[in-house]
Image 1: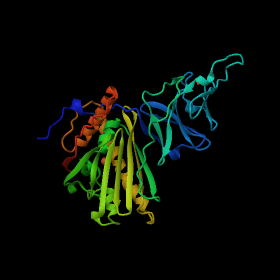
Image 2: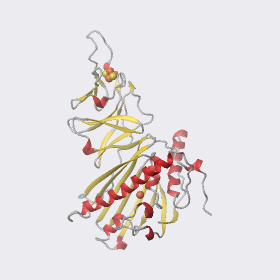
Image 3: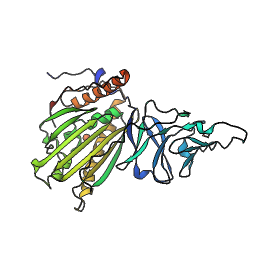
Image 4: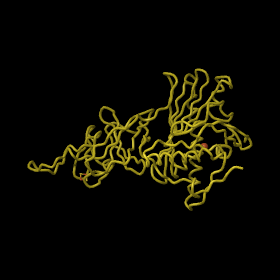
Length: 371
Ligand code: FES
Ligand SMILES: [Fe+2]
């Protein structure tokens, strides 16, 4: 009999995980020589692009008296606080100047730092690495680099198209993530006359396997009502199409669909902004439709519709969650959500003990559900 887990053990705790890269802003919003506020994991950031085009991220609070630096002046190299004009190197956060100092005052300006964060541009987004514990706002701490580069969308040929979609969700990162991996909402949320109705619901069976820090829906022929599949079927024999979907901590869902030389690949992230607010960013790359008029527009239209349906659903869910209801996760449809919480708990436990993370899955698992 499927077990019904107690809500206490399995429901969202809204805990946000430092020690990972997060998407901060779409790269085309980060203009050269300008400052942009952004929030990640409740940390206020000022994100910008220097005069050579390289992005940077500083804590958006002056180490002097906490003024938001994004209201200050940026000359393409240094950020100047609008309150007393202290200036900081945009990349290192090192203080360059304190205008109020007289010639005989020998305060060591270069020992003061505005907190700075590793920052990279990848697949059209500015990514920021949030270390643990976060650098202090006021202080003398020089930031260190990230242990690995920011995640990328997997690509399988040198020429491809790329697009992104982004949507704010008024729920915690946990609800955003389990909503993303939830197979059972499709027939109810993602209805459209050109797509499917709730009557198209049918039994499905999928194999899952553990991968480092996550799990994989093993390569299979995609479900006949998945979006890119319907489009790819115009190009390749149905049985030559395979798809793989991975989830990896803290918030990465990657999907690749391949049909001979044609491919479609996406990397979706659910970014914790605050405890009760997250953002979904989907970046997709593909080499189909490159020569078909309206191809990319069609794909973007389909995805925009899906993301909007999910956003609207989470907006409604947020209303219900205000009252702290008891929640439950069932087998098998909510099993990926259970793995997510177990992975998160295992990650935190490994950090606490300093031992290697114990993966919650001991081997491959087959799940069944109707959707
Ligand atoms: S608060 Fe920034 S210079 Fe004083
Ligand atoms: Fe959805």
